[in-house]
Amino acid sequence: MLMQYRTVKGPGQAEIVIKKSRFIGHAKPVASEEEAIEFIEGIKKEYWSATHNCSAYMIGERDEIQKASDDGEPSGTAGKPILEVIRNQGLKNVVVVVTRYFGGIMLGAGGLIRAYTDGAVAGLSAAEQVYKVLHQEVRVEIDYTLLGKVENELRGRDMLMGETAFTDKVTLCCLPLAAEADHFVHWMTDLTHGQGVIVPGEERYIEHAELP
Image 1 (cartoon, rainbow, N blue to C red):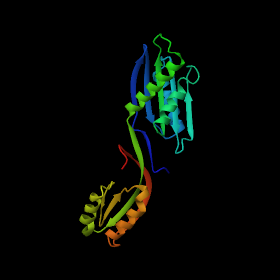
Image 2 (tube, rainbow, N blue to C red):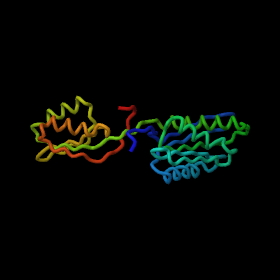
Image 3 (cartoon, rainbow, N blue to C red):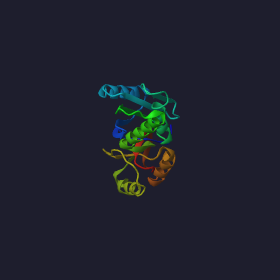
Image 4 (spheres, rainbow, N blue to C red):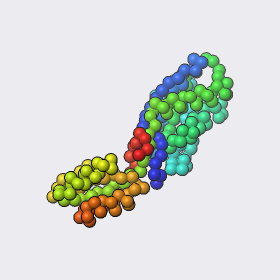
């Protein structure tokens, strides 16, 4: 799994007007091609009266799935420019649809490429770009006598935390970066002098506005 990647918080939508034609950019994070297609079909249904609903999506750790549709615009003037925006912004697991309502003035091939590019940029900007960073859950079971010390050390490290369980002992759900999980386990073992029960759990992506 990737340690981190950029995507959008989404969904987001923004409109621009170019020579009386309306271009509405829509963007959304997706986890699969099926989800991307469902989003595109939903936009087409909602904006059924539009002249075109052009789209592109890029999915997978290595961008394995890349598709683009001109939806009736001249070949290469809509879907490909939208896909290029996604690629150039370094985004993954994203679908973008740019809806066009024709305003009566022909834009030409170059004008269409610029317009769909700008529409995609607007939609992605409205969707708010974020980072997905891989963390690993580590559960730490300790006696109550160690709780204050451990919590202070975790706060000092700005550790992300999940829910704490209070029973006959305390179980802390810690979320270190996956790349640092082994080091965290060793550190926690030393911190508790081997008295804690430390159990690494599943890895999962957590959203960050900036890289930690």
